[in-house]
Image (tube, rainbow, N blue to C red; front, top):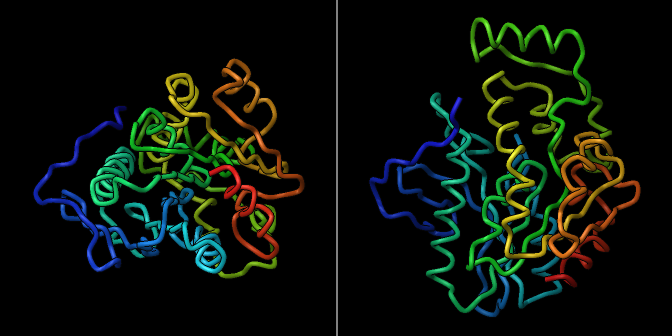
Length: 281
């Protein structure tokens, strides 16, 4: 099943009143943040599967308070957050959308350094842009590799039904949300349930994109900073070793975050993590 599909261009893409980014196929991506005239660096955040641009609101507020030379922006990816839901959806649209945003920012602000930060599945999307000359630096803040905490009999049975009958078969699991994010941070409770459910087609498309990460690393022109939380349920040691054991050490800088969870950019006491990111810009 191919996930690669070009967007039908009907208009010129661009940012509208810092409220949404209008794509070439006339789709609105809800927007976060402004690019300050004093900024030397633009951090563009790409959120995780099922999450929203608010993944980067704490980092944005921190930089607005302490770093006038850094602007943090983000957007709701297609079909997520406050964006309009579309029935015919392909995950390659997410890559197309980010490509248009990068091209727009690079054209409008050529003198500024553009940095990409991916959160979870957002890191997968970002990995497709590590060869781009417009990109100054890249960060992976966690990875979304094991889409389910454990493949049990029920999930395997549903996958078989998906193969035989329909890609629309729903795959579900029940997760304690406290193992995904600090329980002190309740502003994202409405989005956490997205990890519990997806259809079989989504599962396959995400898996296919994840399988390209290693190749993207090998082709990268940049050294990627991987912030790896030790309590992340979406990547285990075996998966990590299989993916990164043969990666050139000059292409990856691994920073282990002890006792942090998958959505570690959110919650109280994240200033030290923000300082680490800013130091590496």
